[in-house]
Image (tube, rainbow, N blue to C red; front, top):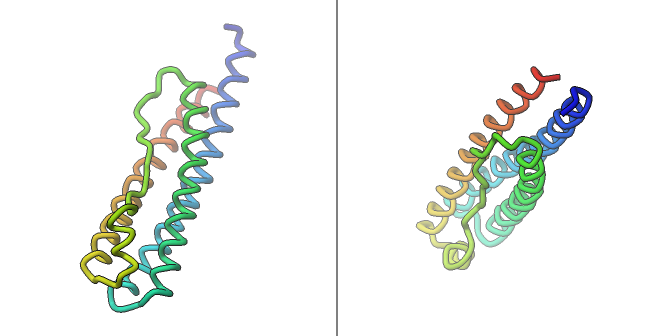
Length: 139
């Protein structure tokens, strides 16, 4: 491969890394907001607070879907990188239904899922940042 072609591929990979990070940072912020609303929900926030929290979770999930698209493109640009986990917020099904019932136990369960998702988003951000750093050294 010619050096010019390799530089173009690296630049394309950097672009995808940046787009991935944009979505991941947005998801991280939305999960932080959801966590705050989750705390309010645990101490008796009611249906309105639950709806806001769930809305933040839906928005975060949407950002993660977009991030996944760009991460997949990044991985196609970099054949040697395969260690980026795909994050999904798991608060659907019974937990999602019971969350609306105002049960403090389910609120705590959903809160733990939010924290788990935030942790995985942070790990993914760190991995993409490391990939980006390696790519920048190649240009």
